[in-house]
Length: 129
Image (cartoon, rainbow, N blue to C red; front, top):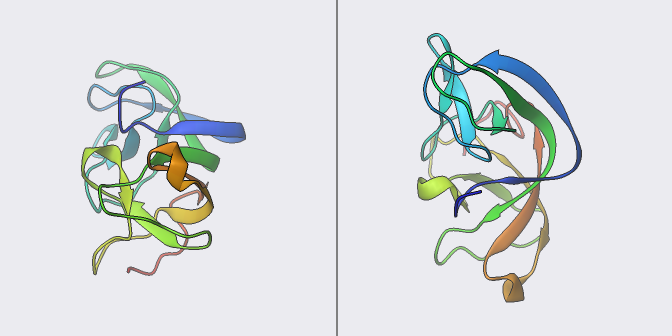
């Protein structure tokens, strides 16, 4: 998986959808017009790609569970912090208007920025940061 991709931890719920664009395993995805597409900074995340798919392919999407990701440079979260999707498929504290991605459940400064978080079908809440 590429730098900045998300890695599932344990048994996570998956659904199968159509890829509306090229998607790599581990990328955060959002709902697009004709399926799922790669999500970007601040987007509402629908789930995480379980595999790689070309446009039009069927792809498995993780919709809930625990994941590890990379903290954005300068972001040092604590357990219990709410996080959002940042640029380069990293996580940060979000900006006003972002929909939360998850809640930090494990962080280790010695890990080089790896953050383990809980993701639940479309984020922590429908509220924005």
